[in-house]
Image (tube, rainbow, N blue to C red; front, side):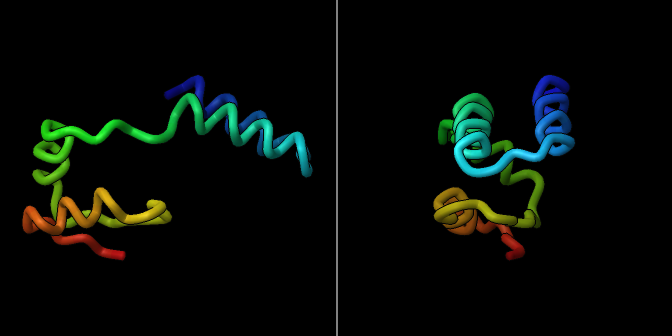
Length: 74
């Protein structure tokens, strides 16, 4: 996580535009995004209800959690 924060802060302090920004986003999302959905993850997350969903893409995880009775605040 510290590596991510370092990279994020480095980019935020540099003015990136166009292609450079796209390349940075691709690099960061490949490394830190798109968690693998599995039963254990859903069980653990369920314990922390209610949850706040912020910019979560398609909302697929939120739908699965709602089906388990988790309160999702959007």
